[in-house]
Every structure is written in structure tokens, then in C-alpha cells.
Length: 212
Image (cartoon, rainbow, N blue to C red; front, side, top):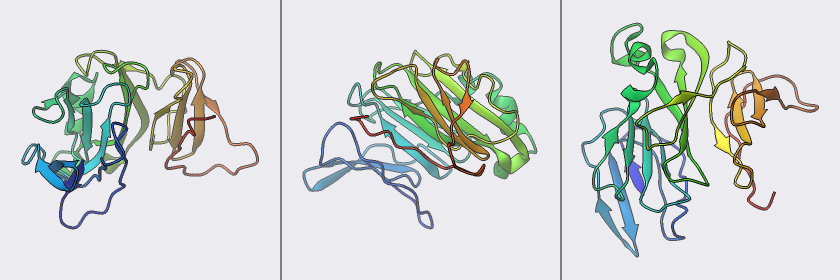
């Protein structure tokens, strides 16, 4: 899948459903590559820039998309239709309106579809553009219809830049934040700083090797 918007430069996560699929994250056009052709599947769905586009590793065709203006969309049919589930996150609408104006929208910093269940996903939200520096991590087990906070006892100051689930242990989560790198051994109930021999600082992302 590929998302295109002029003036944006964002990561290119690969699709777990096949080696010929690739995604970038940019904005409103998400396209499916089949062999050497592209098919537009979501033109005009999103207004802001797409920050992250992830396909479920446990079920091809379940696609999650997050934008920089508080838009969290999920498709269960390979991108034919999308549903915005951001408003189902507890307190999400209040976060969007803080400060007023489109520039104050909360950003979906990362989405992590579960390796074990297609209906389960984690999302990290970033509200720094309206001076909200709290950590926000939420989990759904029903394709975004309901969400539960799993930020647990993370420090109250420091945005979460990413959230990842271990591909072997479903209760092991990783959270790079503005003020360090944290892990949870119990699915987000408790968090522990994990930076042996490293200074405290911003961490943006973590990749878990499937053999580890």
C-alpha cells in the first residue's frame, strides 16, 4: 500500500501479507500494488497527513491508518471501506478540541496491530501540539469499537512515540517515549524503564527481530 501527499516524507512499512506489497504513509491516497499495477482504494477518506498505515500480521486485509489530525481508521475488507474509530477512545474528543483549530488535533503516532488476533490493536497518541505531554496508549480487542488505556504507570510527562508488541510473547510491549525506552511484561498494566548503559533521552522507534 502507498499513501501520497505533496510535501510529506514518511516511513515505508512493508506489508506482512506478501513480499510485493509495500506501504508509505503520506496522506489521503492508499493504493494496493499487485504485480506492477496500483489500485486506489481510499482516495479522499482523510484530510490530514497519514502518519502510519499498518496491516494486521494475523489477518491480511485488516488495515489501520492514523493521521496527524486525530483520524484513526480501520478497514476489514482490504481498504474497500474504512471506519473512523478515534471517537471511541476514552477522552479522545476532548483531546482533539484542546486549544482549538486544526493545528491542535492530537496525532496518531503509531498503530500496532496484534500478532495474535486480528481484532486487537494498540495505538499511541501524541498531543504535544497543544502542550499535552502525557503518555497515551490504548488497546482494542474489537476492531476499535471499544478501547482501554494501557499506559499504566508510565511517567506522567513524556509523549509516546511508538508502541510495539512482541511477536512471540503477547504480553510483552515496547514503548519508545520522549524521555526514554520502556517495556511492559503484563500487557501495559506496569511499565519499566529499559535503557541499560544508555542516557535518558528521546527514543522514536523499536523493531523486534522475529527470531528473538
